[in-house]
Structures are given as C-alpha cells and as structure tokens.
Length: 117
Length: 112
Image 1 (cartoon, each protein chain N blue to C red):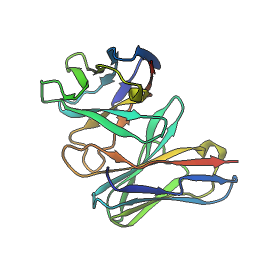
Image 2: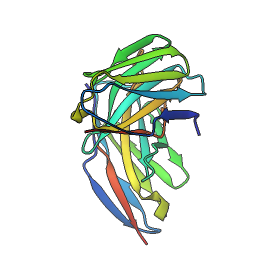
Image 3: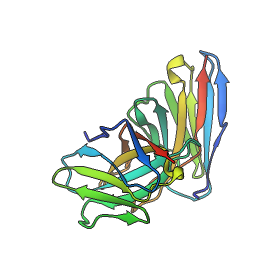
Image 4: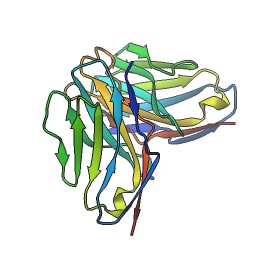
C-alpha cells in the first residue's frame, strides 16, 4: 500500500521570503500522480499543483513550484515570495495512475504554514 | 470553481441517531468520493463511487453507507451515529485524466 509522509507538522516563513514544504511517499508503482492541496482557515481544499510521475520536468504554477525526485520518492513544494494569504494547511497527496475504479487520493497528515508580516 | 455543494454545512446530532449528508455536483463527473478529516490524520477515504449505483468501500468505511441514484448526487449515511464519527466530511469529484479531485466546502458533524 502507498503511504505519504509530511515530516513537518508546522512551518513558518516571513512575508516575501521562500519556504519549502517536504513530502515523501512510498510506492512500488512506476507511474502515478502527485498533488499539493492548500486548506486555508475557510476549510476549502484547493488544488495548488500537480505532477505526473512520468514527466521529469518539475511542475510550476506562478509562485508555487515542486522539486520532484522520483528515485528518492520526494515531492517538495516551494512557495516563493510568500504572501499572508498563503497561510494554510498544505497536504501532499498521491494517486495511482492505474487506480482502476478507485483512483482515490492518499493524503499526508499536512503541514501548517504560518506567514509572518 | 467546480460546482460542488454539500448539505448540511454544520450538524449536531445525538449518539444513535441516523444522519445523511448530501453531496451535489453540477459538473457531470463520473467519480465521487467521501473523505473524513480528523486532526493528525489528514483526509481518509470513506466510500467512493465510479458511476450511478456503483460504489465501493474506502479505508474507513465501518459505520457508513452510501448511495448514488443520480450522477449528480452522492449520499453518505451514518446508520447510528457515534462520537467517533465527529469529524469534518468532504465530498470530492473527479473525471478521468489528469485525475485531480475537486472538493466541496465540507460538513462539520458533531455527535454528542
């Protein structure tokens, strides 16, 4: 069974600085998807970024980018130019490509990010 | 934003009573999921559906049942609520590649 581990329960960053959130996963599969979701105090789960394992290029969405290291099974999220609105819980999630009829996400326990003005 | 609504948004109920949570989507997505979120556990899958009347169990399905009679609606039922089912419940939808899931706003359920 696949597992996702986020080893940093809490992180803090100064506004305008850069922060990296860590995520590692365990799988025997060669092709899969990885996601980062953001959950602000409103509780809404918001998709931040997606990475397909067969693509070597790291995904980027504006100030958010990932460092995908497939051999190390690592999928970290870098937030550049941090803003107050980035304060939230961040969840890393894994999905098998060949999930059949299931295809559910396997989540890490989350990292709470605080942004200091 | 994906068209997903959940009702009710908040509910307080007593131990032993039945509870039904509703997820409604306007996206015509095939796959629908129910997760629960608890402190220290992230989100865990309860049940999922891959089509009308096609459902299956997830990681934490004990004490829950689901039904999907229409593409747009996915119901989660707690047959006899227990305090351990106090949680925030999220519905999610998905449609094929690239398989990302979009979440509803969540329902906070308290069982006293």
